[in-house]
Image (tube, rainbow, N blue to C red; front, top):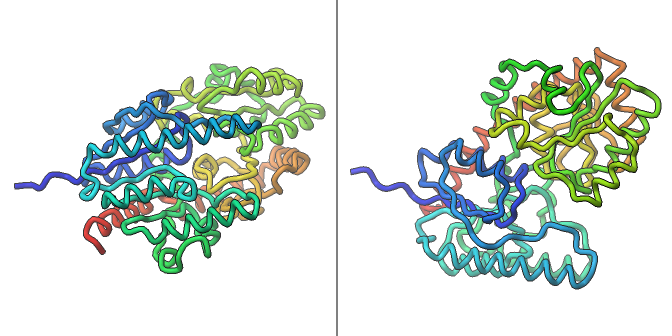
Length: 406
């Protein structure tokens, strides 16, 4: 008689989706033959991520709680955001009580230095809890960082609690924030790409000119693409400032940003102030297609890729662009240099330097040999070093060891 599959529960409490969900989807693909998977997410979740789950035949359930990711400029806004976080954690905990957590795996998206009470409560229920950290805690005041460090030292000593750093930079920076034993046991499970999916996207038919026109992008011009949430930490205004500098000099360069969510009216008005007109286009990812293949294929409309973040782990969109053969520009921050080796696998610039971004774009545009070289070496490096199948196997092996008590 075959034993029933153990439960594998994924949980997050924010409506947006991004690289963190792509990372978890990669694990789900490999784990669904071994575990009974359920995803718990907010009722307000974007349709895109639900489509991705349905394509994988992954069951999902809703909770009536959602974090507020909007800026909190006032004390009142900060207090309301904290209350929503506490409410989301309490709601999540109560919802999870319907499962036998001692025989299940729980992989949650949360910040351990904030959610230490939730993690402690789950530990008291003998839960096997895994958290992936894509970057280190944000810089803050000395007293706040001291509190965070105390909390991290505490949670790192909880039984059956595990952290996966998704890049080496994050692991290195956790030194001293967690116990030495915990630090030594942490395994880096890189943000990564699936070579088979990349190959399929490359092989699939695509009329670049027609696809561009379909999404309001000029055909026959040098197109620079960014993919991700259109938010400050992704360097959105640096991207547009570089675009403005280039458009003022040249008429044959255009810019696009593929995003899961359109900005609000205030941000739309600020975009208009750059005076880019049809030289810049925001493209909603849901208009590209309903599955990951459609998104990956869309990358191919571009001639170059640029992601100029101020804060990142190792962004999946950058790895995907490299793997798909796009010469890529990014910033010298956090784990990005683990993928972009300047002038070898791509171009690195300093965060916030729109002039350097503009110069790098024009350099790629004018030098076809450089584009070809960076495209080739970037593709080889991404496919060789960031294979999501190997990463998922490391994660699943850790799940098994936790359940067996090793």
